[in-house]
Image: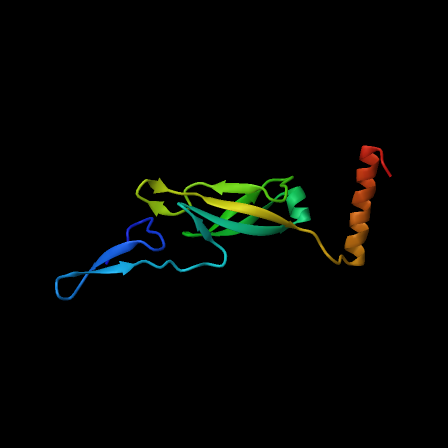
Length: 132
């Protein structure tokens, strides 16, 4: 039996039977802890550090076809969604996209050196905006 591109959970398919009669099969789609489906699009979330969000970075991203490099530009805000064209589900009307939501992680317990650097950033920000 061949499953058609874009097949969804719960679809009924006819599979050939041994006696020449077809057997109706209900399709079950395996879940994935990283990728989820929304129609023809594939959704995922990635986490990057605050430093990488401010300065920009490249991340390796898992797609349905393997890994690709995704460019995260400087100044990326938490919750930003990047669209990776043509990396979604293949279907009868083409292929969907992969939508990548960016979470920015803030250090919960910075060490002394890291905390000192954050303090320097705060001082720079205050001077730039004329505040204490």
